[in-house]
Length: 301
Image (cartoon, rainbow, N blue to C red; front, top):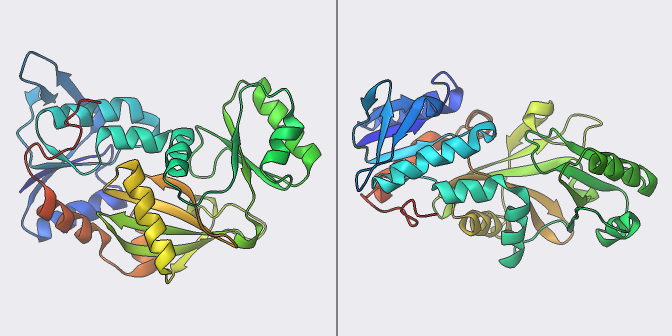
């Protein structure tokens, strides 16, 4: 097969591992810098050009699109879809997952466990917004934040009011969310490919840190999932329309709760924590599913 991976940096661990896994299984794979692609939008013959030449026809693309280039990255992915190329994660699904509010609304509609969440533009009563998610302590999140940046734990109602007022004064879009104390500063990253969880790790926040992101100094270890946790992770991926994603869960007294669905999950932390060949599982999925024109939306949305 001829595969392309859309990545800004061929030296990143995740990109290197996918390239290695593809070549080990006898496939041809190119690393294409997403921002250096440009689109030829013409009647009946969409194309993607790169470094002055039209790119060849690929059997599949693997989008590794960072949050900072979502708009352009999904436009490039959509162009490939319109050309009939199989896309592991369709452009529409990536856009859904990058919008935290939309993600939560979709997950809520499907009955998937979530921390109680509030969203408002100009609430007349901030006290009621706080009360509605169970009161303090609570978590306040910037909609555009990544890797734990823009996530604040408000220990008291007064602190929560001050933080919400400050963010609103800056015209920032925020979510106010129930704090799951029993999670103990830990979450579970489930790596979903297709309709199964192929690897899972528990991420524990550094001492005194409620955020468990590895970028914030957290640690990772292999974890055994319950049937309910596996089912929740797969259901969350399906709700987003993603074939490959990281689903972050919290263990609560009310069962697993989804915090986030990541359309471009890193491989380094989970492969090193579990010892599993996640990149190889991704290539196997492509082998079984890549067919010309097999994308559901076909670049229409």
